[in-house]
Length: 476
Image (cartoon, rainbow, N blue to C red):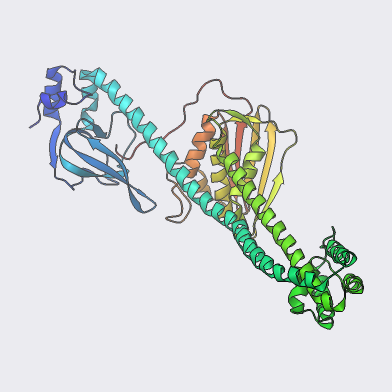
């Protein structure tokens, strides 16, 4: 049996008149739950407020088909439907973790409760505001983690290619150097004169002169055959392997003829092999250098994209640069579908005062959706322009388009046009919140073969914070 004393132990009601609490005790329904039982289930109608008097229960939500903990409600906390809440059904399931005793207050009694105890109404509104804020924070965090997962997968592919090239190059370098040492001993044993050594150096330099690598595949194949024949004729071992390296660097039979006139026949094979090894080492070093530079560029893009080395404040930001960084992060997904990216940037587009990390999240969600929607070998078109005090950016794909009934709901929380398990329906909701926070706007237009999302952001920062439309917790 409920008493006024039960409610006096709850912070929201602790200082209310005993007579009013006695009325509440008579009005509410006492319920007891054993550990493991569910006070409410996902999708059940939300018609009651729960005052937890003893024990605790945990709320679980379904995210992509997986059951995830949302929060725990302890003795003295309030859950369920709150006054002024628009929640109609529970978005999660409550599971008792400690034997619980709960007072359930039906929504039909909310108005009388607040008339009797106005201060309780104010406190419950504050609780609901906190609930909405926490729910919004968790939604955004979950969407960030999903975006991060996609970006991380793409970045892993982007980093793997140059990293593998460096590993492969280092291994080949070790092999080349191990073979060069015996050649050096052999060259010393041939007793070459300084002029002959200089002739070998000149041949090496000729092979690595600028511009020699501009050959078509057919031209290089023909040159390899010519060089292999020359090497066979002059007793150089592994002629086709050596010819491949020499041809790639631009060597010709004529340059080798000049070398042969300066070098004794018995030393010619070792000199040619020494040149080939030197060219291969030079090529491998250049490949390692390019790969290391690529990794360095990717790390710089990640730092710039995430703004990990900057304070989370508004900054004047080049929107084009942010979009390009996002394209770098999504590069693997773009290449996987063989998509082309067309840029139609406006002239004299000024920087925009924004939170760069949040705006990059907008580009990530919109570009990721566009990549998903575009067909194989399709096209993404990016445009920018100035409209008065706004800078507007279009992100367009040439996919099948969005049905009109879906366009009308596209920004609703948890609404998605993707297959089950492939989308949470939170991406565009988060995008809209971020854009609204910047006092901007986002629009969508779609028809078969073309879908365009347009984001417009003010050049100058708003003078005061903007209230962002938010969702509500699943039953906290």
